[in-house]
Length: 272
Image 1 (cartoon, rainbow, N blue to C red):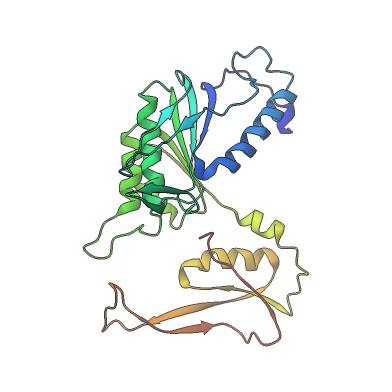
Image 2: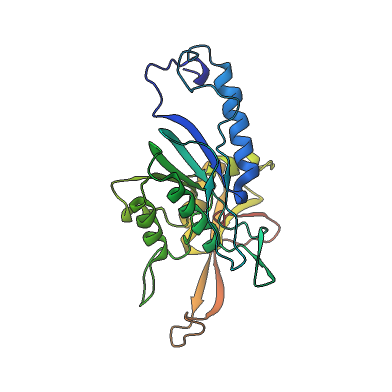
């Protein structure tokens, strides 16, 4: 049944509230405009209190002190709301002043702002959801030595603060959700969107899919099977007798696959 023809029989979880932080302001505005238009088109939900609004965005500020420290201020009530906090932790275009110098916001700064907004809600929201298009610390998703396990700890910290669901896109390793097995974690795969926007003339004789490393093999195999193409991969040959900057140096990138001469090549990596 088409989405617009479905009937709502239950009241939504709570009055919807979207909190896009500055790093995600443009995306938050697009989401809000879509929801306003879509909900206004529905004729079966006019009696649901708080279902239709002119805007679902909750005004929030995260001002900073001269020391570089910050706070979060929510400028409207969120009591009983179903809150969705949106943040782009890798948006380094935002700046702030500290000690007379201009600093670019790091992923740590963006993550701290998320926690400040959750704290500002003061437990009044009915449910809190966090949307991170790029999962914070997802590069540090496993422990191979005496090192921190930042991504798993981040997820547990958000859950401890009252977050019910965490939504991301194409997580570096979706298995990090094992750290919060009783809470919602969604890693939305973007494979279909990649294929949809690859406006290419598919020719199995003159095209192939290549994975840049062994970690992306599953993704490359999926693309190759869907498009009916041959595939190959690069293997990072390392020198395990040396350690440089905390890791074994790469000696060479070895290519495993058929000859690429004269072929169009699609190199598929994850979103980062």
